[in-house]
Image (cartoon, rainbow, N blue to C red; front, side):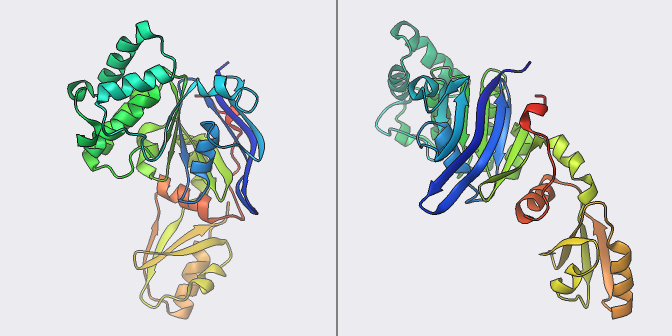
Length: 321
């Protein structure tokens, strides 16, 4: 049976009267890279801070490698490596000084510290800049140093919050490869709102929207479960208002897209025949009708813009790595 390294249950967090997290729950197995995907303001960073032991939940539980974060915070945090959205860089230190200092803080034994730092720098592609000041490094190398400080003590769980924000395309590619390499030896939870990040690095994804988990599955599983909800693009020279299209039987959602409309049907319904009849009868001058590929972008939009009908997905314990 797969070993569960992160397990959260009924996690809720209030900021005053605002409920930032609403009874969320999911699991991450040993060796898995899991994407934590959602739009800005969905609750990702709040959840990450709670998982890292930096913020207390209002309700619910968090277990890291079997340890209760609330009852045993020191022991649980020792199992975690955390990279916040802004990496904790000390600019006046060299890379080697920085990692040695943090390794000592995290109780890496003194007789193992030199090797731990050297291996981490090698793994993160930092060996050739070991003696350079962090403030003189590029953003990409500072981000590498941020990931290095998260793994220098060989934690079982690595939590990365928006690890590629602000990087150029080459740096993004390098950091994504580094994250993929972390999987297998560590359990990785990757928070992002960048869709290609999930596609290129993750085994599984949990989607959060307005503080609630609306999906938890592999990417392939999401695509299969939403296959009967494929949207289609419509372009007309004399297009009606969205409200009129929304009234067509079988239409779940209408949104503007590239000079036309992207229409999402209700489950197991096909509004196309009625749409065609109305287009002819009303003189809408239909010019284009194209099924949309069931891309990650479409799945994400369906999950985060439609609150009345979410895709029924299995609990994470039913999903194999």
